[in-house]
Amino acid sequence: MSKVSNVWVFSDVSARLSEVMTGALEFGEKVSALVIGSEEDVAKAYAYGATEVFHLGENDSSKIIESYAKTVASVIKNEETSLVLMPGIKRCKSLASLLAVELNAGLVTEVSAIEVEDDSIKCKHMVYGGLAIGEEAITTNVAIAVISSGIFEEASADSSKTGEAKTVEFISPAKEIKCVDRKAKEGSSVDLNKAKNIIAIGRGIAKQEDIQLAENLCSIMDAELGCSRPIAEGEKWMEHERYIGISSVMAKPEIYFAVGISGQIQHMVGAKDSQTIIAINKDKNAPIFDYADYGIVGDLYTILPAITEALKK
Image 1 (cartoon, rainbow, N blue to C red):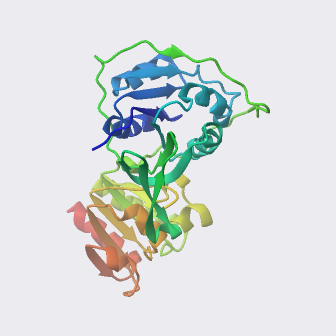
Image 2 (cartoon, helix red, strand yellow; image 1 turned 90 degrees about the vertical axis):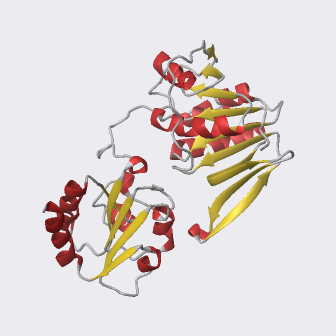
């Protein structure tokens, strides 16, 4: 497999850096990490396998991520064939678009697979709301790929790998937006990308208090609770971090329980890589049964408590 001379990695969320590093180590002869944060964050980048680390400064609450576009571009430049990898976080997507302009670089988001060839970097990504997979060939010197969650395994940290970071001077954009206040987002810090088992609920749940039925099963199965888009963004009964689908979590659990979920493609794109899918739906013609390894046709209000009680025994 061909490799690019250098892969640049960036993530403003420390927990996603290890996943991006795995892809960088696979595709690059050299891996350069761009880090905003403390000395501990720099050490993590080296421990994950970075060849070199460029320190963009400590976390500054007054700066938004987009403000770093010119600074990052000044480091990467446009002198040799290289690939920039970022996780599919909203802030990284925004930074990637500005960086593409600064570097005159090709950009593909929601990337699910990458292939390096001699004259281009090919990226596969979902199109038409997940109904199909498109392939784009980036032929610019610098290629930018924003990857979907879960396409690379997390890199293992090796504390024996160390190095000295190169300090990068911050370059202010022509018109910088300043952050004047930050408020903690209410909700949990759940990461469904790492969940072993998931119980996901959909429109079949009639009212918010009935979510407790799924939570009871979660406690028995040592599972995390997830949901379809209408529950998180329509009803707002659950946090966005628990929404599974094309524009949010791409889960890969061992067991995926789809409870009262119809199984539209936008949802199933986020659940299709589960090892085993079990569906409960009262509509025998629901699309979810086309994806399920095991299906139960019936009322979830009867079936969920029955399964929970059976597992307790």
